[in-house]
Image (cartoon, one colour):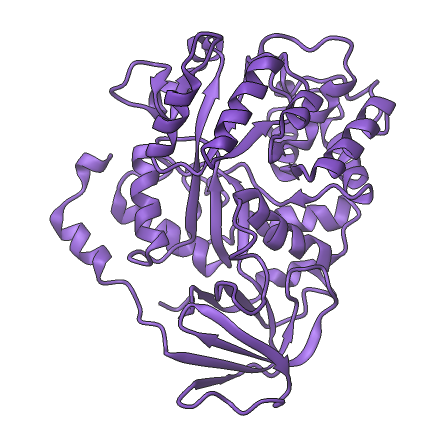
Length: 437
């Protein structure tokens, strides 16, 4: 794909950056800060460059000298949304289309994403463009995938993610066995620009432990499928994984035997294993104790059960809702991720650039089916999702010192989670973006 770039396209991309004001003052706003705290009305937010300088009630402080002032009376401000589970590789045919795609995500309130395995050469370029604001779009953090050799022998997707490279040998898409030099492999993975390792499938618990330990030693996050086959969810938690993806796959914790092959991952016994089975309750409590984040991905299984019911176990959707509710009630941090390109598909199967990002639907499911309040769902898609990226110290809440990533809404999302779709404008890294660009 990168070979299709032209010098002209690069010149177009280099011209999209909008200079941030030296100082911007937002006044009379109702603020939902992403921490889970109640909303605060009539607040002022001072943005200095790309950072939040201060937040205070009303006009408690004089406006900064020379600041641009925006009166947000009747507006509601939440942190920039973070989709903690996307797959963006090759969803568009060329870079000109990616420009529109990424801008649609940003206009829809998404300030950052975590890409959970794809073509790292492509993702690295896109991340460099968006993270430097050379291209208007969410910041991109991405993973290098590791799995057992049998996965690479049986999954056709891996060749597309590493074109021109022998299957299972790319630093960002690599087979692992007991003889793998993990120190070298993880250094090479880090060299691709990945900030996390995705442990995907067909690996036993000792290798999950070894990969996790070395990844953390090299400063990488560790992101795993909830069940890695044959490693159980509890094996990933014990190894120290930072996040577990897919609530539905927690069902295997209570299975008498976990298959060696991940191919049955969505075919768990949802009809007979209760979400509150003792083994699963113990797992959730262990996740809370370790601070392990659950990347729930509810909407993808809802859609899969609706459109391809033979591909999932009967009862997967209500089971996923119920176990996510239990996780939340027991104090497990739950992130919001879509397991999609980030935008819904249009009728032709391509991302619908006129639709709102899928993260809004994911938040709505957390409220409507998993027991979250709207403010808790916003926290899932901001602070907790920032934690899933390993970026909670710099983004995810509206607080002094944090990046100035915010979504300004025309209706109160604390009253109705669907109001997160009523976007007036977006601020990313201190720059204002409006949909009528």
